[in-house]
Amino acid sequence: MKLLALVCIPFFAVSSFASIVEFHIAPGTISNPWNTHSTSIKATVGDTIRFYNDDSVVHRLHTYGAPCEHGPDFEPGATFDCVTIDVYSSAADGPLYDHNYGEAAEVWFEVVK
Ligand SMILES: [Cu+2]
Image 1 (cartoon, protein in one colour):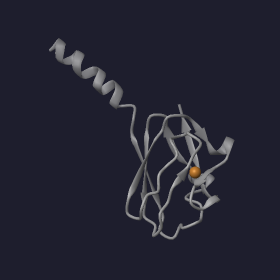
Image 2: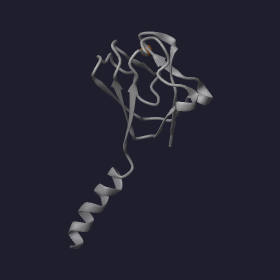
Image 3: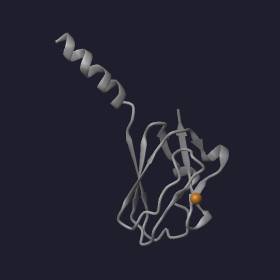
Image 4: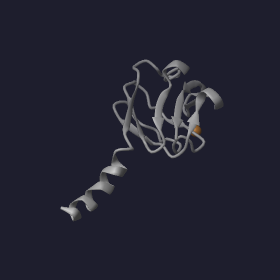
């Protein structure tokens, strides 16, 4: 039993901290903001923010390396996983945006340690 505990405790200790935060890009978003300050995507570094493209056009998250790497194009009906690697506060540093539509297509985050 002691051995089992030694093997299992580290697994749960690591996995219990990271979670998946789901965010749906609404139909009809096109070149408009994905969300707003008040609906900022909230996560902790290490979490995966899973974007669902519920829209009719390709979307692509623009970042400068935080909270996750710059996104690829992802098709309507597809998902994109933003694996967070650093803090990012849109309230402090401004919204990120859809690479394909420019800065007006805002994406708001509050990703903390
Ligand atoms: Cu970009």
